[in-house]
Length: 200
Image (tube, rainbow, N blue to C red; front, side, top):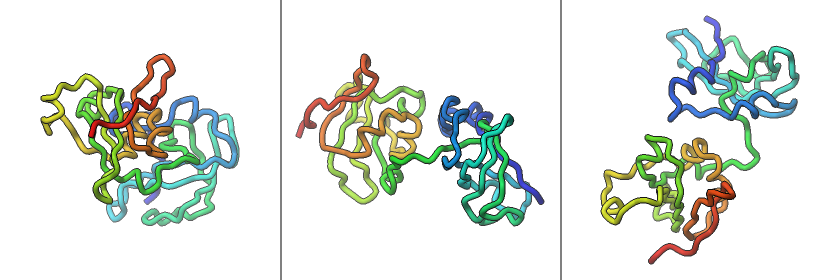
């Protein structure tokens, strides 16, 4: 059986809190040489339903782009690295960044559940030295938590650090080079500023 590309805009509209994509401006202004991630779907019951693979943009066309597949598929038999892939901005799931979090993206953070479930931007970030290899050291708050909230584990979730940064890209400049401290969101500047050390 064949394959098709997933419409990532459609998937994002259906699942806005769990399926994130780059902005429209980023997806419509790609340049040759950029690396983008596309989702390849197959209906073959013997294959995985989807493979996420990187494609190198080679040509900008009226319909979108032509790129070169940069992966060898694990499941899709009629695709190979180097194959030409025609795609549009709506197919782009991710764009390679020169500032990835690397292995830290899989580490767990502590976040007010409203940040995760209600798309409320974190306003206060606290970084302490991680206590285990799976711990990112980061806590993300709304800034309105009461002492009772802080002592109630039901008010918090443990998302991956990479998930949070994908959802809130403004976090990246702070979390990519963590320094112990408290960071507060400056509404006027639209960025986080260092606000001192955590209370010991």
